[in-house]
Length: 144
Image (cartoon, rainbow, N blue to C red; front, top):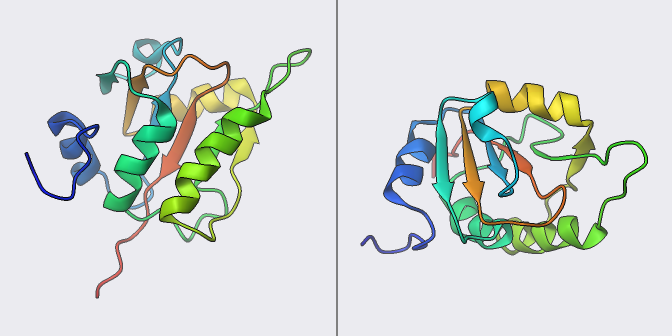
C-alpha cells in the first residue's frame, strides 16, 4: 500500500499512468464498451464507478494544458439522448481536483472509437450508465 494513492488505482493502472507521456490518452470506459476490439492494452476495474476513479487518478497527473479539449466523451447517436447527470457527475469529480477546468466536449461515436484505438490504454470500469465513457489526455507535469 502506498500513501496518497487511492486504493481504486491498482498497481497495473499506476504503472500505465506512469508510462504515459504528455499527449497520450487513456479511456475510462463503461462496462459495455468493446475495449478489446479497439486496443490491446486493456485493464479492468470492475465495480469501480468512473466518477470515483477520476478522483483517484487526477491527483496523479496533469491534464494537457496545450489541448483545448483534454476531456472527451461520446456524443449520443442520432435519435438517442444523453443523460446530463452523467457528465455532471464526472465534472463534479474533475472540479474537486481542477476547480477551474474547462468543460468536457463530446465527439461522435465513430471518432471516439477511432481515438480509443490510438489510446495508450483503456480501463474498463463497472460503470453502467449509457454513454459513460471518457477520454483523458495527459499533460506535462510542471517542475516545482
